[in-house]
Amino acid sequence: MIKKVAVIGGGISGLTVGCGLRKNGISVDLYERSASIMEFGAGITLSKNATSLLVELDLMNDISSVAYFPMKSFVRNFVSVREISSVEFDKSFVTLDRRDLIRILAHRFELSGGKLILDTEVNLVNSLTAEIAFKDQSKKYDLVLICDGIKSALRNKIFDNLQPEFTGYVAWRGMVEASKLPNFQGSDKVNIYYGPGSHFVHYPTGKEDLINFVAIENKSQWHEESWKTEGIKTDLLSKFENWNEGLLYMMASTDKLYKWGIFQREQPKKLIKDRVVLLGDAAHPMVPFLGQGACMAIEDAFALAEVLKGTNDLNLSLERYNSLRLRRNKFIQKRSMLQASFNHVSNPVMATLRNLAVKAFLKKSVQSLHSYDLKKKLTFQ
Ligand SMILES: Cc1cc2nc3c(=O)[nH]c(=O)nc-3n(C[C@H](O)[C@H](O)[C@H](O)COP(=O)(O)OP(=O)(O)OC[C@H]3O[C@@H](n4cnc5c(N)ncnc54)[C@H](O)[C@@H]3O)c2cc1C
Image (cartoon, rainbow, N blue to C red; front, side):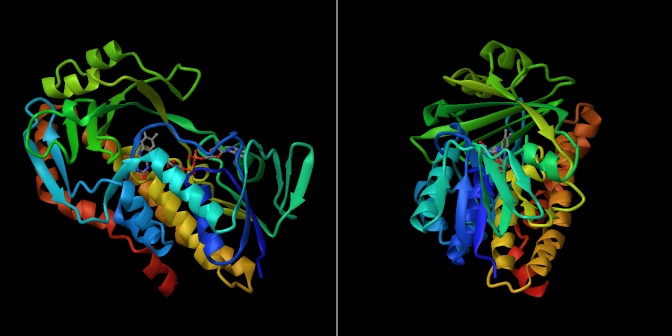
């Protein structure tokens, strides 16, 4: 029986798996290198494949109390904002502020008896003995979960030498008040605009009337030292100068603008090594064009907590986790990357064909993405 688990990293994957394990009565120490559990102010979308699992973890009531239910998503032309296609959602699709999601997960983790150890960077993990080292100390567990995000250094020490690679996309993110929304019907839903070599997304977050926007452009290189830097508004506006005026006004209205180089790292051949498991962005960081990175982290977390529930055969349970998650994550990682080329078509003839495809297949494609039922897979595996 597994009794004591160490989780390294207090992001969405670490906190969710912590909540799942505590629900199953397993003792959990979660190590986070920052002095507090925190996130930057930005929006996040969560779709049914993830929110249905948060329901099982009894987290969805708290999340719903701070979330927004957009109920519909539009794909539009970047100049005329004319609708190309749209798809309706039910209340299982939510948008919210990332800070609220993290706060709720951390609160639940601690309330359920999880131990949050802040300001503690784990430097070393022994995969054979499940021993971890930090601040000149070491501690032994039954299992160690690596949830240290896209730049995971621990992954390199245990699994492979692959490094995150720049994907050729840069994202600009800002938050504005709802009064800055463009003035047309449906602008308070999820809206996605396809332009040449770029696309733009905005949606309400449900927090203080704030709208989150993300503008994505093709870029051959990323020179900044940090992956996330403060962006210059005039740079953003000049990149999108031919876009709809209402959208430019939105972009110009943000107080703070951040700029991200989008990186990706291939998933390792296996997500387990002896007594160590990889989850979330540490295993499979992906481009955010389907809004699935955090959703995959939640799926990983739920799957692992379920296979470990009452297990008498740890090796078998870990193999189950590996086979359940490896293919699924790889598929979504690839599909997210394909979506970028689809969104950014520049040739006008190809763009017309792309729009016809969006008209015909948007509903089906969104449904196939969001209807993945991990609980069913766990039952029949
Ligand atoms: C522009 C953009 C938009 C996105 N939008 C969406 C969206 O709408 N929907 C969606 O599903 N996904 C989205 N994502 C993806 C999503 O943000 C990530 O997949 C998710 O946050 C990954 O969570 P994580 O817990 O695996 O990693 P992280 O959030 O990176 O957490 C890792 C944690 O580990 C800690 N840590 C690191 N090293 C150590 C160590 N040695 N010891 C202790 N602690 C350590 C870090 O401080 C950090 O707190 C988006 C991503 C981007 C870039």
